[in-house]
Image 1: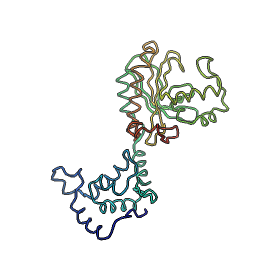
Image 2: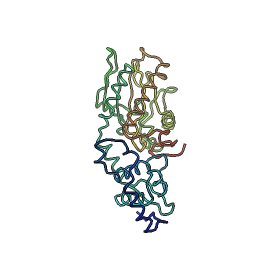
Image 3: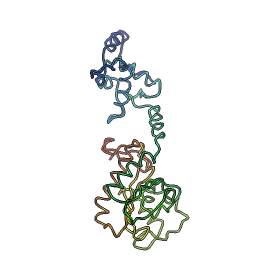
Image 4: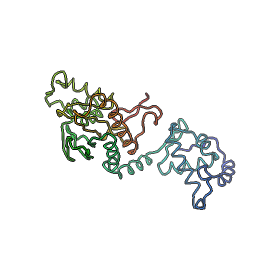
Length: 306
C-alpha cells in the first residue's frame, strides 16, 4: 500500500501516538467486567472496515481519523497495517482508502460455508405457513431448473414436485426468473438451437419473443403464472441474489388454481414471495438498492447508479 502520510511530521506522529494510546473507540465505552479483555486497536481496525463498507466507499486519512475519533497518526498506523494484510487499498492519486481484496475473500469464505438450502429452508417454512401453499427453492442447470428444496403444503390438494426434479426453465416461473439473471445475448445463445413451441398469444413462439419475455421478467423481478406450465396450477417465483447482486437461485410457491384467483396471486401472495426472497438474499449478503445507496443491480451482478 502506498504511503498516505502526505502532511505528517515524525514529531507530530510521535506525540499523536501517545495520545492515541489512551483513546478508546466509542463502541467499547460500555461498563462491563469483560472490557479488560478487549483490544482497542483491533476494535478500531474493524471499525475502519465498517466505515469503508458504508455509503462512502472511499475515505481520506483525515476522514477515517474523524470517523473513529482518533488522531491522524493512529488512523494511519491502523490503515497501514490493514493495507499490509490486504484488507485496505490506498489510491495515491485521490489520497483515499478503500476496502482491499482480502475482505472479499473473507466474505466469500463465510458465505460459501453456509449451504444455500440451509439458509433458505426456514424462510420457505415461513412462506408456506403464511401462504398455505408449497414453497420451493431451485437453481438453473443449463436449460432446466432443478428443485433443491421443498416445503409441502398442509392442504390435501397440491401439486407435488420432489427435490431433484428438473423442469424446463423457459416455461416455469422459477426457470423464467432464473433466466432473467442472464443477459439477453446469453439467453439467445442458450436457446438458439431449441425450437420455440409456445401457444400463440399466450407464450413466445419465436426466440426473439422469448428474449423479450425474459427482458420483461428481468424488469419485473417476479413471475406470476396461472395454469401457464401445468393446467390447474398457479405459481409465483422471485429471485435469490448473493452479495454481488447475481441471481443464484429462485423460490416459488405452487397453488391450486381453483383455490385462488388472479387478484390474490398478484396481491398478497406475490408480496409474500418477494418478501421471502429478499430475506434469503439478505442472509446471503445481498443489499437492496436502498441499502446500497440507491444503486441498481445488473444481471451480471454489477451495480450501476439508479
